[in-house]
Length: 160
Image 1 (tube, rainbow, N blue to C red):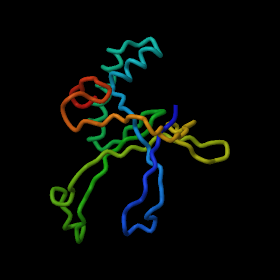
Image 2: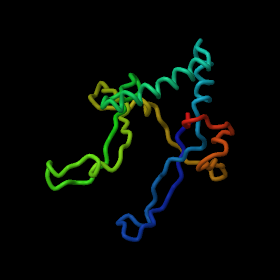
Image 3: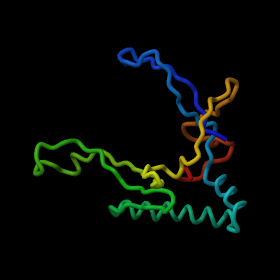
Image 4: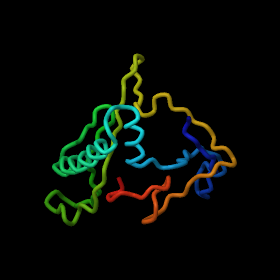
């Protein structure tokens, strides 16, 4: 399989690239935690219920560690940390967290591998191929809230 893409034309009037074409990756579906656990169960001797329990606990422990100002590195996967969105202060003395910190977000840095030629590659992208989405392909639309998750399954609490 390959990462599918559609061609999009730049339409912003002020862009120096107006009228030019770019590829945009297309997700044809979303695989949820239960579906991943089904696949993992087929690949090893661990049961789906055990996989789901470990993932649920991993999320809780990661949350605790991240909120304790720690990076969380999952070997072979990547590193997570919390980032801040702030408004500037005139001086260090004027900076107040409740006034100047306006948001938090999660940052993820995928694991990279140093190749023999000293170049770096991201593990998740090794062997990645791209292919244009066939003209008659149907792409499932994501639901905003409630209802069923893509793929027809009911979402679990917390979106996992």
